[in-house]
Every structure is written in C-alpha cells, then in structure tokens.
Length: 310
Image (spheres, rainbow, N blue to C red):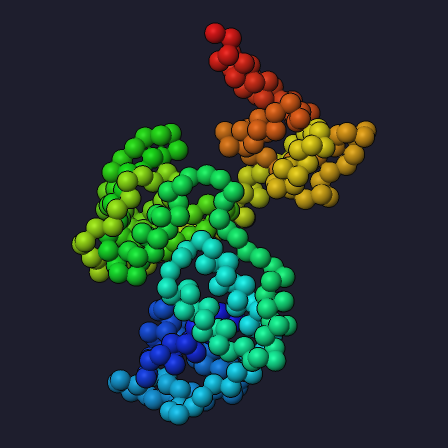
C-alpha cells in the first residue's frame, strides 16, 4: 500500500465534500476494492470517514473534523517529502509547490528538525548532467495537455532518423531508465504509442481537446523477455571503466586479472545496441569469448577505422 496514495486520498477528501469509490479508483488507476482498503486504513489511523451509499453517495470526512498532525509518523512524512522534492526537480508547477506546503503543514514543530534531517538523507535529482535542452520545457507542455486533455502535435524521429508529423492524445508521462517517454494515442498510427521525448521536436499544444479513451498502459517490464534473450560473454576490462560496466552487471560478475584489469561475465544480446555498448568502452575493453562475437567486434572496429582512412 502506497503512503503517497493514502495522503493524496486524504487531501482529496479534505478538498471535496464527497467523492465516490469508482472516481477515486480511476484517479489512481487501482480497483475500487483497493480504495475501500485505503479508506479502512485511513479510518484506523484516526481520521473518521463516512460512507454514503446509493446515487450521489461516496466517501467524506466527517464535518468539523480537524486532522491530528500526529497521524503521520516521522518516516511517513520524510518519505513523502523526499518523493515530492525529487519530482519537483523535474516537473515544476504550483501543484507540487502547494502539495509540499500541505505536507509540511502536518509537521509538528517538535518533530520538524528530525523530519528535515531524515528527508535530506536521500536527495533525488532526476535532471540530467547534460543533454537535450528541450526535455524540461516539453515536460511542462505535456503536463498541461494531460491536465486539460488537449492534443499534442510534434515531429518524431524513429531510431533510424526518419521523421514524421504526429498528432497524439497524451495519457501518461513515463520515466524509464533515465529517459522520459509519452504514452499517447497516435492519430497517424491509430493506436497507442510510447514516444521518447528526446526524439520529439516542434512540440506544440493544440487548442483542440479530446475525450479520453479506455487507457492502455505501456508495457515497461521486459525483465523476463530480456533474461530469455541474454547470454553471458567474457570480456576483459581496464579498471578505469569498471564503474561504467557496473551499470550493466553486478560486482559478483567480476574477478581480478592482474593489478589493472578484470575479467567480467557480461550480459549480452546480439544486436546493435549491445555491440555499441562494448564499443563505447573503447580500448579499455576486449571481448574474449565466444569467438563469433569477438569476430563481429573486430569487423565493426575495422569498419569504424575505415571511415577515417580517407
């Protein structure tokens, strides 16, 4: 059960006089049964919520009730502040500022120092060191279209650089492996697509609104598929690239080879992406086996060298 969802439900109930279970379920993309469990949890925490059945019914906090600031533990408030602060580094807006202010209002004066200390123990900064300068303004544009259900138009480049004009209904912003994506319904393809923000250009919000469809979530977990496709190869690396290799496998895959090098069992799929990973380590990495991958690496290196011969 997510603490941030519980806090959000409480905030919504404080803001609205009454709201139905299905409406809450749609907001958080969970089942009504999950919402009922959340309501029971909030009740057990000491916040009295009344349920009214029938048409026009729903949940509401009992009138004249004031939330006890001690309802959230130090760990609860610290976790919420860390999450909201990390998100505010990437997506700016009054909503996040207000949310942070509301959460901080729950902090009793005698616990403020301890909660601030714990909240600062982990700092989440999702902004890149360098890269595409369009990402930040594009996030703001997409966030607005999500809130107002407005169409987006943009130019999109596929993995080979082919550009097409697209119009899409935005449904979800996705942060996956340090890259931002937009899940939307593409009018050109008449289907849902996951667009990478770094491949977008000329992004514009249209005045035209749309009626949201039954939303199809993107498939983001490919762990089982990748595991079935991957094989282990043996590479020899210089210690200077060890930190970069650790982004792809754990230290248990390493064993020393002299004072300056390591032998690594490296997870590998035979496609351009993985070959380019090995090439990216430059002369600090040598593929030892299997032989056919070592041979393919030599061929690709010769092709690169041929570019510079002229």
